[in-house]
Structures are given as structure tokens and as C-alpha cells.
Amino acid sequence: MTNAIPADQEFLEYLIKSLVDHPEDVKVDRKVDEMGVLLTLRVNPMDMGQVVGRQGATAKSIRSLLKIVGVKNNARVNLKIEEPEGGMRQPRADGPDKPLDY
Image (cartoon, rainbow, N blue to C red; front, side):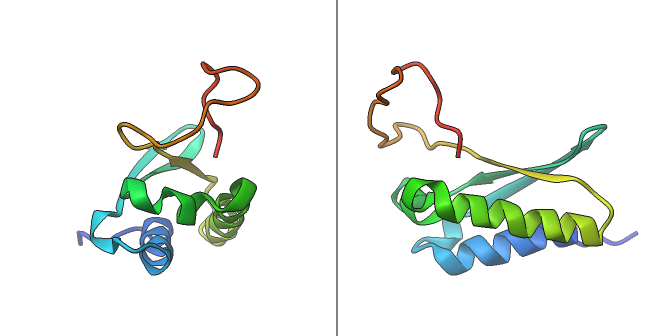
């Protein structure tokens, strides 16, 4: 058995490292359960804006591409973008306790 990185994880790492200014800080964890594949992404706090994009447009596009990769591999792929410690987000108008959904 080889230690090959699954196609979805490898694709996400490549894509994100191409977008950010600190590619060495990109970390992708992969978990598989009955719901499918969950990829959890962590990036340098300074790169969050580049990954999320204006009004979440970049994050939405990344999720769309991951769904296509998942279809090719007969898997349901979901992406969770972890907010960095001491995140730089602004309070939301709909309440400070409601988490952002990237």
C-alpha cells in the first residue's frame, strides 16, 4: 500500500498554495465518514481574504471545483475553512455570536 495523497486533497492543496502568499502555512486534513469526505483547510491568517474572496465568492468557487473532483471519484466532498486563532473578522450585523459560514 502506498502513501499516496487522495486526488481531492492534492487538488485542494495545489489550488490554495497557488492563491496564497504563505503556501508553507497551508494545511489540509481529510476525514471520511458516512456523509462523504470532509476537507478541513487551515491557512495563514494574512491569507484568509484571498481564500474566502469578496463576499465568499472564491470559497464558493473552490467548493464547486471540489464537487467536480468528488464526482469524478464517486465521493461527496465538502470543505471547511477554519478561522485562524485571533481571527481578523469584523462583528456581523446579524449578531456577534453567529459564526461565519465560508
